[in-house]
Image 1: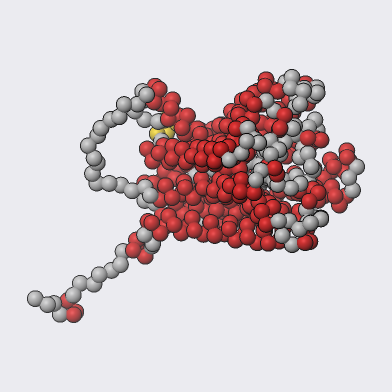
Image 2: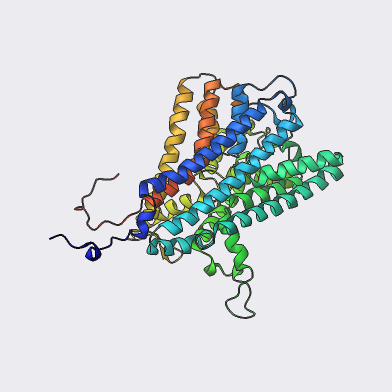
Amino acid sequence: MRLPVWRRPVLHRSPASDHASPASLRRRPAQLITLGFLATIAVGTGLLSLPISATGRNASFVEALFTATSATCVTGLGVVNTDTFWTPFGQAVILVLIQVGGFGVMTVASLLGLVLSRRLGLSTRLVAAESTRSVSLGDVRQVLLGVLRFTVVAELAVALVLAVRFMVSYGESVGHALWSGLFHAVSAFNNAGFSLYGDSLIRFVTDPWVCLPLSAAVVVGGIGFPVLLELWRLRGTRRVPGGGADLWHLSRWSVHSRLTVGTTAVLLVVGTAFFLAAEWRNPGTFGPLDPAGKVLAAVTQSVMPRTAGFNSIDTSQLNNGTWFFTDMLMFVGGGSAGTAGGVKVATFAVLAFVIWSELRGDPDVVVFDRRLSRSTQRRALTVALVGVAAVVVPTLAITLSTHVFTLDQVLFEVVSAFSTTGLSTGITADMQPWHQLVLVVLMFLGRLGPITLGTGLALRDRQRLYRKPESSVVIG
């Protein structure tokens, strides 16, 4: 029986139907991020190809593309010398690309955390609020302004220290000192590694007034904006009147902040100790330095593989074992939602806890009295294994196509490109053009891959009303 019009039920659209499908939600952020970075690289390539950008001959397409990609993806690898090949205009273009790339990465990663917390279900949002409270409860304007303010203050502070040092101790003119200080401060905070000196920081290897501010900028910029904002908020809060700021009570920190800061500190200490032990007597690196200089050089070299790219000693003279250890540091990288690359320290820490729990036979992975979800463990494993594949395949392809470079050298360059570090054994400029294009792709994937992959995996989380029968596979 056909009901009268006035008695027919009115079908209201569900609020969820106003949103795009889960597949489109996964594609849309990735598409916007990818297009934005591609557009920036294209504009940078065009500007660097202009006659006004180079001191002598015009930059070739590969040289301009490689430099623009390296700057936008805050890597630091180069096929030409930044100080001699590029004019002040070209250097300014590189500086702007670094700033746009670094600021873009921090805001994009932070805003994606905001998107995730708004798009996911209530239970997942509560978990996200616990682990990344700085971006899950704020708004877009707060995130953008917060990143911008912190970036400007940090870069100007480091630039001022460096400029004064360059003027007082190295006799540079006021204009050159200010420009050099600003360039290196921006490059360090954004973990780019571009330098206006042909030998990077080698001439400053024993100067703490240059190496330490740059190292601090690298660590702060690479640790991640969510961690920095959380610590900033905790500095003025107290659990009880007169009881001291919550900043000093680690129990008040989120699991993400404790994992990131703790793992970063451990890697810095272990890295410093390793470099001291492995390079103490190496005549090409630490050998000629006094004990204090060796310690400073070890600290600097431990910081820079966190995807910064500066080097205060000749990287090409490192022992093969030190190269491989540096590969591992570069692959791990820095903090999430920061300017650092790599698979991120949180991913590394989660996998370490997974292994420890499995060795102990524990049914759950517990980190600081909190049980990690299965989805978090799977995402960490996926990001790490995809990163391994992204390193192994290009390394194999380049090694098979050349007999000029050793496996150690090729692996170092590939890991440096994928992790957007910028350290080099000195072979980048001598590689074949298609090898350099492979590194261009790796820099792009390494910069955006972990962010978009992690976001896409998180947006794929869904609950099933049934489970398949359980089985097992023989392992080991």
